[in-house]
Length: 423
Image (cartoon, rainbow, N blue to C red):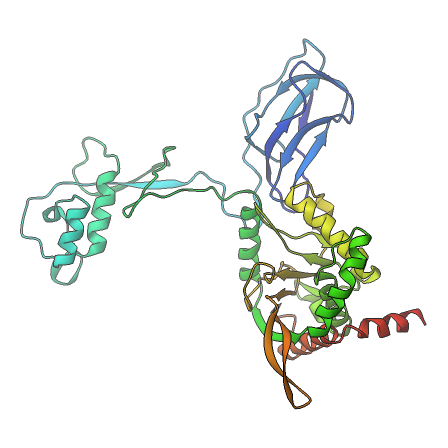
């Protein structure tokens, strides 16, 4: 009997995928676990293997098409077996995601009215001439029946819409949205880009965070002059071991010390319970051509600086190539994001919900600082901490930031704490 291999639920609220490329053809015999197809989801591109041996009787989706979870990707069986054709099902609803129901658009049908003297300002008349509409046919909604710019634009848009015969007055009718999409608006040419993939899931997560958390951002700065010197002295040592040493491993270690002392920032709110995490899985936001992806370093407190640097580099490369495993995108307890490598100082990062906090770093700048009564030039790192005020108090957030700053400004503390842990 022919076997219908359906697109499985891969978790993380993923409802659909896009066919990147088939590795087999119809009529080809495949073995169990042989690679069948590359699929791009909102998170990554991954390869699905064949669940069984047999002949590819039917490929149900072409490259570039979107397949909902639970829909049949391919039918596998033996030559001569009957392949059932089933209608494509709608993707299952996802929490906080926009409705997938086909949108409706309103078509306005205009009834001509007798010409008369139009009450309109010179600027409104000029706009009507630019849009090539007869201002005398427009019903004004302004004071005393005056025609406004909004009236002119609405009228122009209505004229551009298709009309139906036999309708003699202005009315609205809901019809299915037409496939043809305008490439211009009233002001000029435009480009429409579908919201999909990474950007779609990012938009959904941001909306979820804004709807379900009380977000506050705390700004501060750390004098990382000594840290910059340490990195400069040791980056060649790291390079000889195949590791690119950035500031992120130091940030991660400083954040972990802050989380140990202030555990409410390493937490989630579930119903009416605050869940304090006893592990330190740190997400690091990665800028990719498709949008921001956040790989998670599991057990970051158990890894050395070089191990962290190597894992960050490897995960970032996989994320940029969209080859990252879904497991590497799950299980985070706190997230770090960095705009400093691009530019900018302070900003308002949004938490990776349901996490309670996120730390953002800005560009390191040279600024005058006072040390022991003398003015000197220091290297200053801007820090922005956004947290869920339902879980974290402002005072606790400030104390957490103080701990992070203390370790960034005096990285020798890591050696002291390492010795304390080994005793």
